[in-house]
Image (cartoon, rainbow, N blue to C red; front, side, top):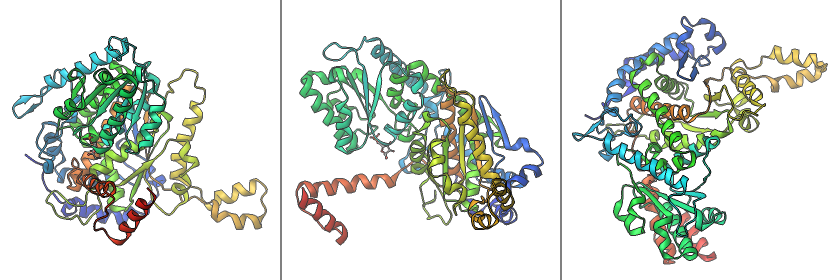
Length: 546
Ligand code: F6P
């Protein structure tokens, strides 16, 4: 019923991968490109996606062994357990069904003997009606004015997914301006409030638990501000909520018609497809929201039904494991070549690092191998002028995902070829590097003196052999974006399965919640209890200035 507990390092393929690593580790990608028997295995075309995996330090054998590793870790068993609602989130005793939320109306998924699709469909209908009513002006504020602005109040999974998608799909925006408040830092909420007209703003409180300190503090600050401007009765008209905690919502004063359910079998960081995406639907219209879900659903089908050899999330996960566990590359960068995806790295940081940042395996034993990587990145070409120096010439191996689109969104965009030439040139340069000969010839051709060439050349050499995956997608649309995000979700899952960890809990984050409330009590009472000497002295310092 639950996931199998297989230590990947005890498998035959892991042992073979170790031996194979010694043979291949110093090989050049540019020669591997020529040596591979079947180059098609390293380039996958699916729907609007072309995924080029050929610029990696892998050959036919590496691929075969990685695929064997997936078999030995019984990945297919894990995939069907996830999709069919088994309790694979064992430590929280929950199924993991974000894929059900975006599945088609006609599908059937049973949980505890009940088909959950009709109730999910009901929520989708509610999101649709609410979106249309706000956009048409049927639903108005307490002073009978049409809404012009919406504010999503949430944090973590109740913020990062919606904010990333709303930013990514800005081109498809409706007339509503969308804002996000997440941090418990009061300056964040106050900066947002500054821009708002209380009469025309709708607030959506998104919190699975409705107990999160950040979200409740921001919601209460906003509620008090709104009441001070429009009076007590405005709350029912200006607030909506997305949560599993009906009692707390009622207590807050939110009209039950504006309440959207969540399910405990959808993890926060995988929840943008559910009612948590209400701000997305309002921001881009329900049809676009629905297309986002359809795109994700198509990727789900691809992941479920395609053999591992041409399965995009499976291959990306295995290649990432190859660098993480054999090359010991600790980090991985994601570089989207579109400004619209500027929040993707932050979103993926939560999705990947909260999921796979675990050091205890599914048996409860401490692992003696590496698990979740550190994820970071920024948009190209901005990133080229920031951290690419380190990727090209630094001491660390940083595998990168390059994401680019064949077509720009704006018809008047005359710069797209410039953007994309950088995209292609960078992955080529990262692989090819620049040899001493090339450096010397280049300097000679610009009439540099021999003396100067000798003193400069070492600094101008690029070692190359830096691995990249290239994702070339036709166009940034709600559908392709849905597929892209679902692709990363499945990659996370495959890695977690192989590393023998639980990807869907987050006990490490819970600690912060408990500790902060204890310290807050001490600050409020001006009474510092027992801490280590460093913390006590910092707290004393803080209280002496307040
Ligand atoms: O960051 C930890 C976490 O538990 C996330 O998983 C979740 O998305 C976030 O906090 C917010 O929780 P809630 O939606 O219950 O307010």
